[in-house]
Length: 130
Picture 1: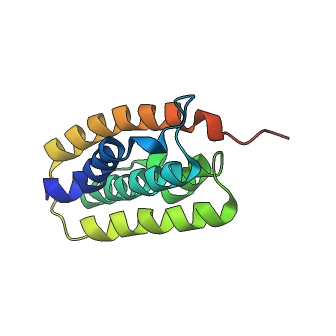
Picture 2 (picture 1 turned 90 degrees about the vertical axis):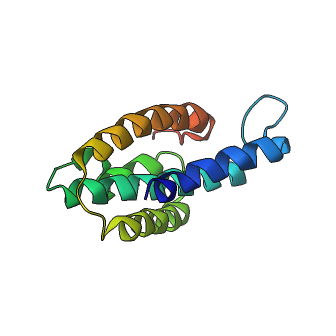
Picture 3 (picture 1 turned 45 degrees about the vertical axis):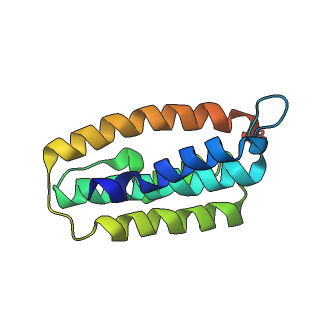
């Protein structure tokens, strides 16, 4: 169960360690790598949201519309739709999980740190406001 929660995060870390060339000379991440990272965090958010549902808890801040709203700031509409399929897969992966409030709390705390890092990495990809 814990392995499935962190598999995408682990894969991204391994990927970043093995393929440092995805970081450009100015320490920014390539667009493709950023899209992969977006898929990873989207899967995690979907799993977190489903965990909350399984525990009869409201976690509106990571609901599908709020999550899509996050990604639309950095990605094109087709990319957001693609990334949101990872969200759905994260939900499906956790659908049959039993409620564990301690695990949910730990997962939420760990996610908050990863979310902060994601926003830092995403900053160069922010779309201009009209």
